[in-house]
Amino acid sequence: MASTRTTYDVVVLAGDIGGTNANLALIGKKGGTFTLLMDRHYRTKDEPSLIEPLGRFIEEAVREHSGMAPELCCISGAGPVVDGRIVLTNAPWAIDAKAVESAYSMPTILINDFTAVSYGVILLDPANPEQITRLPHGDGSLPGPQPGVRLIVGAGTGLGVGFIVKVRNKVEAFPSEGGHITLPVYDDESRGFQRWLEAKYGFAPGAEAGVSGQGIANIFAYLAEREAAAGNLPGMVAKGILELPEAERPAPVARGAGSDLLCSKAMDMFVKLYARVAADHTATFLPAGGVFLAGGIPAKNEERFLEGGRFMSMFERSYARHIRAILAKTPVMIVKDYSISLYGAANAAVELS
Image (tube, rainbow, N blue to C red; front, side, top):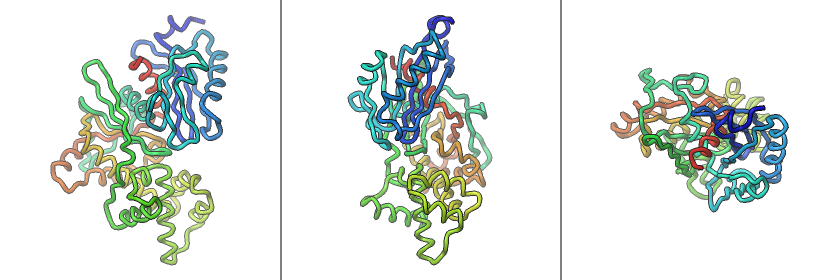
């Protein structure tokens, strides 16, 4: 077997740790190309910490890829990085860079999950339909990305927001807590949902409360309560979902949207709220490089975003003419590559080291 140094410039152990899944990968970089050598997926809440699955992964990697020992480790997590630690926002444990370095004697970098997605987005080809789905504007146009800020707004277990800028040969990504801006509402029904959330949380809700997996569960519960108050019984699909714990509802709601009216209404509101969040961030960052809709939910529900221009018709709305003009020329894309965070972590390891 050829050595790491002759086969690749560097081999990175990359991780993407979210509230639902802990994904680990061995990635080799040669020139400007990143190659996925091996990846494994673990359930975050089934693990007592990151150290255990990381150890099992390294043992397996050493057996399967002799001579490809990782030289760097970069782990992304769903939360801000503070003093070399990430306290996961939707999981029961924290990630500690020093603990990983101590356990495995490997230089370790921690980054926010959407910093990883940002470093991954810079590697994507917007013209490749296997990586990206471009959303047509109301006039049918598909504007291409221009030099400038690229904005990532990703709905999964939570709502992540990040942005990345390339200046000459230097790439720099910036995390944010933009998923917690105030939930932007747009009509009487969404304002009713906002009031329902305010009663639940005790304060005006953030965007994540409506645009995320938990957001789908919230929307569904709100609509179900409203229908019950009007004397309307749920269909069989919705009735079955209502019998599930709230945390288990998002995926069945999305799957049921094609056959159940309540599920369909919930997913429609979710997509429209997502569009309003993306539009608000677009007005802030002016992302000439495009808006990238990342995370598992848009990738798995692409048709609902595209159908009848549901997402883009809401995205392009504003009370201000000049903002409408900006929105109308901003490229919007769904990220289809599920490994984007892992490639991004590997890219970040190289850029930041």
